[in-house]
Length: 352
Ligand SMILES: Cc1cc2nc3c(=O)[nH]c(=O)nc-3n(C[C@H](O)[C@H](O)[C@H](O)COP(=O)(O)OP(=O)(O)OC[C@H]3O[C@@H](n4cnc5c(N)ncnc54)[C@H](O)[C@@H]3O)c2cc1C
Image (cartoon, rainbow, N blue to C red; front, side, top):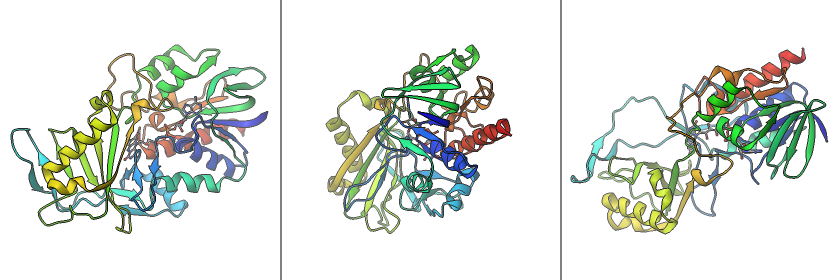
């Protein structure tokens, strides 16, 4: 099979790249390893329950590239409901306190209807992109242009854009000739945002935390859930709480995680916490198309946006995009969108 441009990865960066390339007259092929699009944007939907964001959820006014894209796609934003107070646990020896939240903070928004609206709308807009799911790319070689091998097929392209988190790119795809040493070194120490996080969510029939003496916002040094927020749907008809569980709990089993989460909620809400409809969790560390082990300790956002990611390779045929390659909001949805704009501009300037 022959295509002028191949995009590897169907997350936000890959889909935005396809959307922008189509506008410039390209008909790319997009290869995605999972059986779904979206990558680290993943909304779980169960009948009659609030949609649950197990990946990216929030944006703010600083995320200008993302906001421009949402506006172009006619997708609305809603305020993250924080309430006026939060449960705060400073130490395990003191009971949780209800503390007043400061007013006038910078707004935090969610995408109305769910973060997957952004992925679905981009995918729906694509007319000439050949989207192929379940295609794990294994190697890219310079041979008659570029030759890409997946588990199932071989493709020839003129240009290739890789949108995997950098460390995943070098650990899971073989490049021939090899990528420059400095790029491999930097990639191996580049943090993948939230790559090892655990998200947990509980759906409820009633938002019992919307009570004068309660709150759906939880900040805890005690844990094991460190932060939790109201996660009800925009119509406020289906209700949920969602937060982050301490990453060390990946070593326990699902039942134990569910139990510790509900136990913690009992500290604030008593037996009301038990009346959930369902418990959901995503252990991103267990997602082979997101996370790969680091060889050494890597700090959040380490090497994100390094200039080595932002230049073409192999004589202007190979490009690297993705949230971690952006020097604007690196690691975030906004960075993914910015990286797509950058690679498309790079290709257009090489073609002209
Ligand atoms: C729990 C969590 C919470 C987050 N919260 C926020 C938030 O609130 N706000 C925010 O802005 N951002 C948040 N983020 C980050 C946000 O999700 C990312 O910035 C964004 O989705 C990255 O998009 P991307 O396309 O660059 O990468 P990815 O979404 O990682 O896309 C890469 C794609 O490549 C595919 N792939 C991997 N290997 C291969 C292969 N060999 N062949 C083919 N395809 C492959 C993957 O399946 C994936 O679809 C969060 C992330 C997580 C995990």
